[in-house]
Image (cartoon, rainbow over all chains, first blue to last red):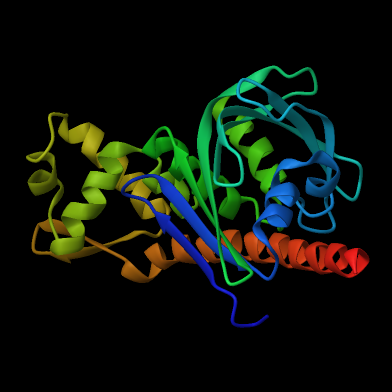
Length: 164
Length: 106
């Protein structure tokens, strides 16, 4: 297991974060873990946070609306709008921070996920593109400033605070 | 007033100033010549950069020279490391989930 690839890069020039990771499982299983609500909620949030999907309609034009719920019950709502799906190969979505009523807090970031399998090992390549360099730097700035604590969710709340 | 480094990079003019003084120490007048802005505006940016501990000043005769505190810039890299850890933690959870599912299938 320890030889599985994990590569993480932040490219400030192109406002893109890329994450590559291999998993010791066949492609269809990994694909399900990324695209089925009941599986996603079991791993998407880094502990002690929990991912709670309110609804998920995995199709082009569909939406996943979910909350990252903290240990003290704090909620950070997020929207993922699916823009493209090629089964077991690729899917894309726009990720937007929101309030509990799905009011978006723009701009969002564009996620592109690629899946491939070789010898029973599945590789997932994720790229996250931020519309503007400023947003990327806000993302970097806010996390550090507040003494970042293992949550993307908090990052979202901080971002919305900054934009107000 | 104390500020943090990320306020420094939140502004495009300040990012440009950082790039300029990373190469060589410069006076506020030298710096202002590179921008379509007033000397006062440049001074304001330099003040913020100073408050972020991102630049150091050195008096030479009647002029003050500004240069970059390279070490301070490394704080940004530290944050990126935190961001990396989130993904690491998330993927470790996925590893566990995948192996559980595989076992249950057998």
